[in-house]
Image (cartoon, rainbow, N blue to C red):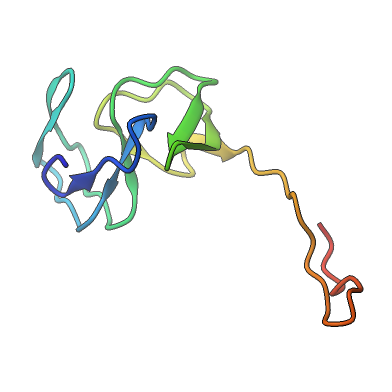
Amino acid sequence: MTGPFLLLSDKDNVLVARANAPEGLAVALEGGTVILSRPIPMAHKIARHPIAAGAVILKYGMPIGIATTEIAAGEHVHVHNIRSAYTATHALQDADGLSAGVSL
């Protein structure tokens, strides 16, 4: 744990805010201390270390997206700098086993 941030898996390249983190907060990361350049809302992510454009974003040790730009250590990681890599692997079904009418 690093201040208000949690590391959910050793594989992760992001930390998750367990509380709102204010702009200007000093956060100790593996590569040194960073100062948050913006407030980070609870449950949002920051980069654990620099992340290259095109790199897979890992949370809970699982891919959640792809970086659309280079992301500096301590930078907010959200929809403005990642895109989803989600591919549906299941479909909802009604009780009778038929499709629930949900288009995937």
